[in-house]
Length: 147
Image (tube, rainbow, N blue to C red; front, side, top):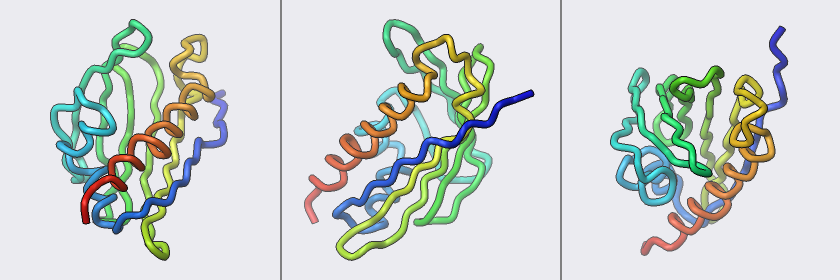
């Protein structure tokens, strides 16, 4: 029996227009600047797949992403797997306009399907990673851009 844990949800408001935030989370050149530098390609198109390697705490993790849902400017979802590691997760990015900016809601599901004896896959590690990406890296990236 598979245990389904509550998803990791992170919400953040950015002082930037919705299309600027959309581009930051879907344009490969921008994504490499704040998210995953080793990512060679990304397209916000259902069915698009990409693969890239990230080193974390001395170990290499080959990421496999497949885009599963896109509503331009509003939502993108992709499956997230690791080569040679059992487990299957997904991430959904949802954007909405707010007074003076954009609200992003990220939902990560399935982290509990990965080996929990690997510190990289604990809920705490994943929560910390998403908090960093959304609350620090992406925030600094989109809010420091000239308008």
